[in-house]
Image 1 (cartoon, rainbow, N blue to C red):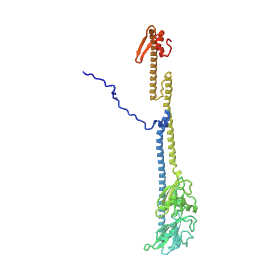
Image 2: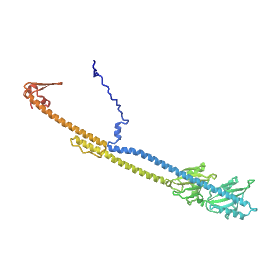
Image 3: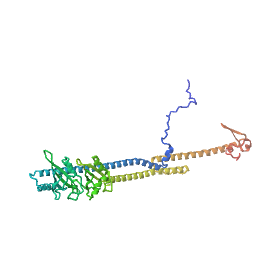
Image 4: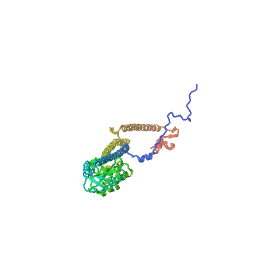
Length: 455
């Protein structure tokens, strides 16, 4: 029966373990050694910092988004206020022109024109509004025939822009702001209403309401808010008609406003609303402003407030949140430092104790503060030191036993008169007694120790 034979030695035995492919790091080790700190504590702190930095970046982006949202919200708020001012002023103009029409129709109902009756009607119409300074009744050629104020009868207003619009067929018109009136010495503008024949459309007269700018505040829902001028009103030429809070202005200051208000110029030219940041003539700081055209008038209403005051709440919130984030980051770094010390310190102690063990010293007591991994390393080092100590003692005992046997062998060989040969694979080694060393070439022990024979 054939017996199984061993495979030839020339054929290597196939490994039963799967081959392990060595994975090389994508980053060269030399570069990592330069980038990373050598101390384990610093690496742990770097780990915390690498986790905090993305979080702080996300918070910064969120704060930026909140700031931008607040910025847009303020602009939309000012735009809404400006639109409210525009709608209110347009309603006021429509109400005044209807009142003008009623006063004109009342004057024409007289069977025979009476200057006294016309003046009384105009005075009653003027008393309906605090902002209406005077009411005039103009003939078709522009001559003042009756007035709620004395001293205006006989004046010719045919060259005024509002009267020219009436002559061209408009049912009503609003004039630009004038520096002063004929009698009054304050800026005013006029709202004129044409009184025409119902059948032929012939112009029979014009009722004009002179409006001063000083009393427009209650009408334009003026409410004071911190941050500078909020409500402004401009005519078709960009001249400042009204500003709240009210500030005494010269005529030059009113007319120069347009030169420094870019959004006002854009609104007058384009005919639609504009919002943004602007540097206003009477305000030293930038303001968030809105400019809105008033439908059918060609005028512009505006609202705004100082950027510093408008964005102060969100800036306070951002500073508060940033302070909290920095405090939390500082506490996290402090905690990381403490944890790093709790890991690095036991490792340093283990390093010193390992050196003591290597020098033959005694093992130190256990470190309860050390992490479990460090404690396992400590136990492994202690076991290794114990095993090495045991092996060293066993080796020392073996050497002592070998010396004893060697001395016993020397004693036996010293009684032998002839040669003694001991062979090993490296060749013969001759052992001899001291008295015939000259023949044999010396004893083995002395030859191995490079000592003279017989010593």
